[in-house]
Image (cartoon, rainbow, N blue to C red; front, top):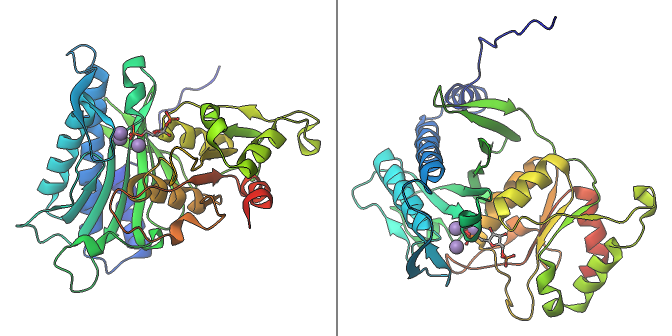
Amino acid sequence: ESKQTINTDLVTLTRFILEEQNRYAPHATGELTLLLNSLQYAFKFIAHTIRRAELVNLIGLAGITNATGDDQKKLDVIGDDIFINAMKSSGNVKVLVSEEQEDLIIFEGSEGNYAVCCDPIDGSSNLDAGVSVGTIFGVYKLQPGSKGSIKDVLRSGTEMVAAGYTMYGASAHLMLTTGHGVNGFTLDTHLGEFILTKPHLKVPEKKAIYSVNEGNSYYWPKEVQDFIASLKLPQEDNNGKPYSARYVGSMVADVHRTLLYGGLFAYPADSKSKTGKLRVLYECFPMALLMEQAGGEAVNDKGQRILDLIPKKIHERSGIWLGSKKEVEKLLQYIKN
Ligand code: AHG
Ligand code: MN
Ligand code: MN
Ligand code: MN
């Protein structure tokens, strides 16, 4: 009979971060480690709140809109409050950008050396239907000598020192990079610990799955329509079968599947959203950094590397295509002008 062995040597997120710090930054102050622990506390609290939302009538609209024109859900606002308080009390964060806050937040009394960009609840339009949502985050170290200003976040994505997301699905899944690859953790609610479950995750080099909202196709530029149409034809390199279409409508869920299975996720700019829908600082950059660290690619509608963009505004948007290297390369044949 199969001997059910219990893993008595669990790698928790806290242990993992300390081991990474000792391996890659032995002389570090430990501030980023503390910041990541405050982030994990925020994810646990948001996960707990989302699981009980329906029971405590937290579903539904808050009746207000945010800086990017989204209708705010009650959980958008609660997730944002949880996140802001966790970052403020960490003592390591000086500057905070949130989808749900029109302006930059600067924690005046803080001595923190980090700036955090976050999407507290991504996919919130799906919340009432019980579809997976998540929290996306990206971390910059303040620039040398900076006391904390907007200049610390209007920077290229290549300068992010950490990024990732926690998807609140059947379990809470945290995917994290600190620049040394991607590692996946699953929340054990009994222990209250994120446990390492997907070490050194690599995205498959190719996969015949495309993930885009076809409801926008009337508004796409011609080269995008032609490219997506080409995926619906029998593919030589896919045993004569066309691509499968998979679209959840929560970026975190669509990117999580793309990281694990491979494929291509896209939210292209179109004639109704001329600069795309997804926001650079707290959706495009973190997901692009994760994808590149996992061996994939992430480009904008001109085929330029997402991480090289430099946003001029904190809620700036961009078209984005990300996923398996081979799938992005197929796209570039159509859009690289
Ligand atoms: P958010 O809920 O944080 O505002 O993000 C919603 C985004 C993203 O999660 C998803 O990829 C995209 O909206 C879906 O947009 P469509 O419904 O237009 O496809
Ligand atoms: Mn929103
Ligand atoms: Mn979002
Ligand atoms: Mn959001």
